[in-house]
Image (tube, rainbow, N blue to C red):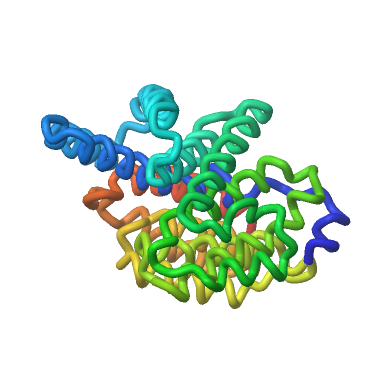
Length: 299
């Protein structure tokens, strides 16, 4: 599949900003938990602040306020550089913010490179065998991934998240594209250990990886469909972005207008106010509205 990818320019599909949007808020919530656990006096404030952010429907407000938290967590890491929890949280925050809100390509590449560095440091602290994981031969890489257990999941997920973002920020680098199979191996391992981790988020990645290329270039649409359906099931339909990506990548790939419109209509007809998902659901409805609007031109 990688060879076929190399033969054509690669578009930036939904695996980029729109895809990682929901993980920004997962990372933000994680940061708030870390802050609140450090001092009991801060606990109530941080808990309420986290709740307010992830349940806010004002995207512009979050965009304007989030950089302050990136600087805050950088400062906290400088004070405690061996905190794998802080490093993995920072990786997810930097990844998602770069993909969602940063339009300058050079700045985005810089931010996702920083995220990948943080993620690599976190998983190395969590598991000595995973140090320099990116540089290991693929067979050795697979052996290390296969040995991981539930305790490694937060750091393994953060690595897969940041690594996928780094690849998509460097689509002109064939060496970066060659790492796609490693991202898939990471997400498959997560589903094997705990398929419900982060409400089935790994299945969303797997569905995206299977469908962001057409079958002629190595895409596996029917496999991707099963992954998307499982992600919806495990999230109990609360994360509306799953259906948006399902429609964007799978339904459009196979030119299934009925499925496309049904998924997006379901998104539009669902109350976006869901604890922990309100902001991402608000964004999902914005995207669904646009996809429905230009569907006649596509189909």
